[in-house]
Image 1 (cartoon, rainbow, N blue to C red):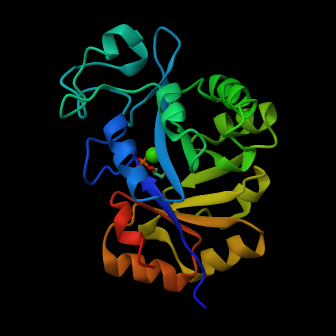
Image 2 (image 1 turned 180 degrees about the horizontal axis):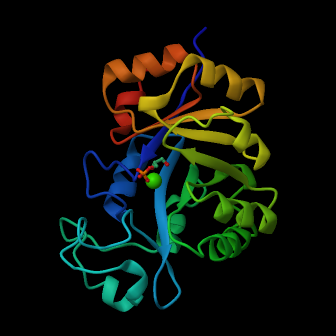
Length: 232
Ligand code: G3P
Ligand code: CA
C-alpha cells in the first residue's frame, strides 16, 4: 500500500487566495489538509505577524520593512482582495487545533515570542504539542527555539543539499528536514530516513512533480493548491 504523504497547505491555499491571509487559511481548511504553513515576523509594536517577505511591497499596497511598522500601520494595508495582514494569534484562533500548523520563523528574534505563544496555546484544550512544527532557514534561531520549547517539533529548512546530507538537521534535534524540490534526491531521502527524520518538500504544485516526490518516498508536500493532494 502506498504510504500517506502529508498535505501541507503552503501560505494557506495561496494558489487560490492572497497568500498568508485569513481568507487563504479559511479556504485551505475547506480542503482538510494535514497542516497549514505560514511565515512570521515580529513587527515594531511587538506582535507576530504573518507575511512572507521582509518588506510589504510585493504582497500589499504598502512599502517598506515589516519590522519598521507598528501593527496599526500594517493593518491599514490591503494584502489582496481587501484582506489584511493577519497576526499569528488570528490564525491560531481560526485553526483552533483542527489541523497541524507549521510556523516558519522568518524574521530575526521570532523564536522567543513564538515559543511564548505556543506555550500559551498548549494550555488551551484544543491544541496538542504534535500539532506544531516550527521551521526556519535560520538555524541559530531554530536552535534558540528548541532550547526554549524542547517538546515542540522543529523542521530544518534547506534550499540545497548539505555536504553531510541530512546530518545538520539531525544535529539540531529536528523532526523533519524541509527541502526545496529542485534538490531532492533518492540518496538524500534515504539518508534522512536512516537518521529518523521526515522529509517535507516545497513547493510542489505540478501533478507530475507530486507523483515524482511520492515515488521518492517523501513524507510531506507543501502545495499552494491543497486539493491537488487530496487524491493521493
Ligand atoms: O516552508 C517551506 C517554504 O515555505 C520555504 O520557503 O520562501 O516559500 O517561505 P518560502
Ligand atoms: Ca514559508
